[in-house]
Image (cartoon, rainbow, N blue to C red):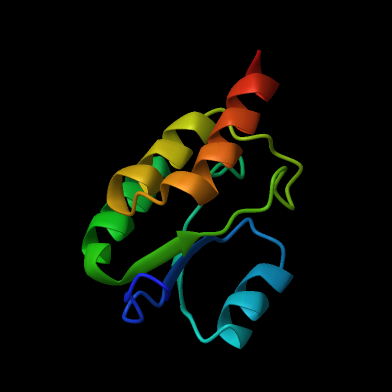
Length: 106
């Protein structure tokens, strides 16, 4: 909100996230949009991209549980992170997460 973006109140959360994720988002005043997962528990990246684009103007964040509650380490975690950065680039907040994930993959 320090950037004058009070309208950004959409939090994308995959169905594989821990139950406290949507609860925390709602307590913070956000509207939760659930992203489906595939039969193996992975985030549906195509659905994530579609929802991120649909909510571009009001998208605040993407909240995931990693590994998911299914015990899944997302193979597409870098793509998932890039989607959130393309839609709403928060250079400082996400840069650290992106760097950590990139280093963990090596």
